[in-house]
Amino acid sequence: MRANLPARNLIESDFTYLNEHLARHYHIPNVHGVALKKVTLPKDSVRGGLMTQASVLKVTANGTTTSPVLRGNWILERLLGQVVPPPPPGTPAVEPDIRGAKTIREQLEKHRESTSCNTCHEKIDPPGFALESFDILGAWRGRYRALGEKKEVEKGFGKNGQPFAFHLGLPVDSSGQMANGDPFSEIRSFKKLILRDERAIARNIATQFITYATGTTVRFSDRPALEEILNKSEESSYGLRALIHEIIQSPLFRSK
Image 1 (cartoon, rainbow, N blue to C red):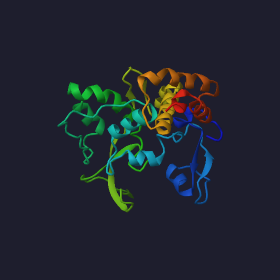
Image 2 (cartoon, rainbow, N blue to C red):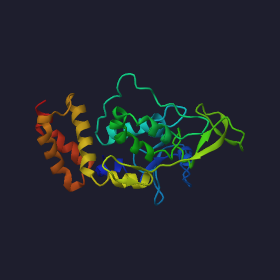
Image 3 (tube, helix red, strand yellow):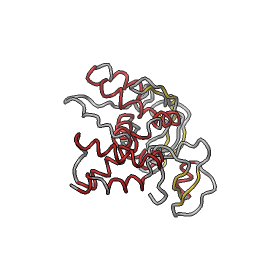
Image 4 (cartoon, one colour):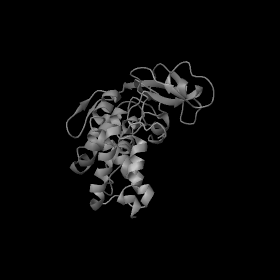
């Protein structure tokens, strides 16, 4: 906000804030100390923006396995402003196969055979699949963890932070296709797809600010005022400070 950075930084940025411990988790060298500091990311790093922060990746996992549904829904609602209705009553949850015999993608494909389920999952699942290369703690991975088979044992840490033995399961596939047909191969190309429409990102940020400031949601009749806010902040690439300034000068803020 101080630097009036563009709204697109919520999706992708060339920096993040790290201390030594978090940098080690991200495999980023030469960061020292316990205090968080601004760090320029290596070229092509996956860590810029909010959705690939370990904090977000952890709270959008279920504690034991990753969930494309939770993560996809978080991206749609929090970053893109697209509200997805809850599942129909009685819809069973998708339980991951901890043996590693099937990936969550394969299980969701089976789940989507129902027309009522597929309507929402064709929107939710692709953003979630883009984040499948991150485990439950937000660390990068190329294969799933699995249990119960006699294979070479790997050593790591479990959800409780204690040492944990497992074996490597099936490869992670983080590709997908958006509901409009646009394909992506992994998280970097997924971010590029979202950034084609920076105004949509800014619209969601402005909507959240207006809701917070006025205590009420943006209604249909408020949309012209919202678009005017975006028009006036467009020159700054929808800078965060510019958005706030335009909101507090708008009738939406002054008359509610």
